[in-house]
Image 1: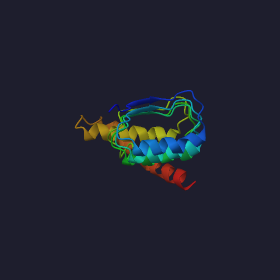
Image 2 (image 1 turned 90 degrees about the vertical axis):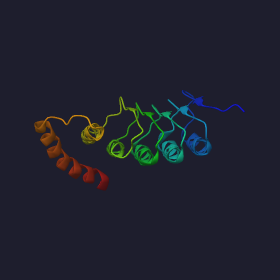
Image 3 (image 1 turned 60 degrees about the vertical axis):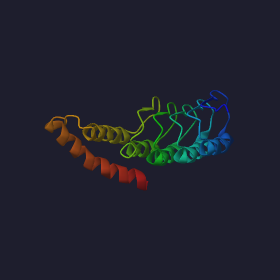
Length: 174
């Protein structure tokens, strides 16, 4: 029996209503590895649905949701999905508007150990999110037994962490 491994639906302007049926397909698929949904205007509604499908999927290794008008709510839902998903290796989210969701996405990197690549070009990622991403990368660097960064830089990172925590709570509460 032939199984579908890749599905390329880029540039089809599917709209937000397509998110739910596509998410159902993600939940049920035991073979699909690479859906390309680039430029389909899924918006937050479709993005949240896709996140729910990704949360339980165990076969997707690459997901392209670039240029889908995803905003903070969809990106935050994707961050939650990344905390549960253990198979996704490549996530493309370029040309969306993550807003505060970029901080949640960065926090998910402290939990997710499967993701190799994340593309966020042209997303206006918050400065706080960049700091959290940097901290996650540092933690992964140390967890892999790599040489610690020079002590002076480590102290600077720890000092930023306190400010970062306050900023994260402000973003989460706001």
